[in-house]
Image (tube, rainbow, N blue to C red; front, side):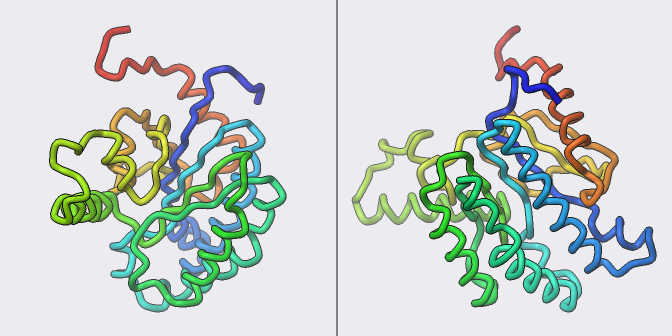
Length: 236
């Protein structure tokens, strides 16, 4: 794919369909998650090589803890492996890693490798890889309201100080709004992903399960984005 001027600055991916990808092949859902993690690694390389500065991915929602306990346990073990070994290439690419979500309910080992990856990539200046883990968009907004109300109660700020910049500064991460959100598998839902940050995002719903959403499929999403006219509530 040729690099063009109209590249999104912030892309979000809801990585859907790992389990169905595996089941259609007679495999366990866990093997689908493994295939998805391997695809994510190669897809990250492609996306940052294109020059897209920020990639956000939905790795695990607050609601995903409702799944079968064995599947959740496998995912937690997979996160440890990914963050400790598989994603070390991000340091070489000078990409900073950030996480969003609640820390409670996550195993100590997952928190340990998360914190280590954040620390080791803190000076990355060639892109941001933002991972939403134990995350929910409504939960983020709830936590935001609590943080700001506590500051008002402590008289650190007044209600008159609350504006868009203050709101953004009190989200889990202070990142630019999403330009493009991709949800794989053909499902057409946003599923509580970065609700505040996606107010004017363009959406793309390919009928491809995430393990098969490779560089070529991503380029098709970018080509579709480049055809869109973004008016942000105004006129062309």
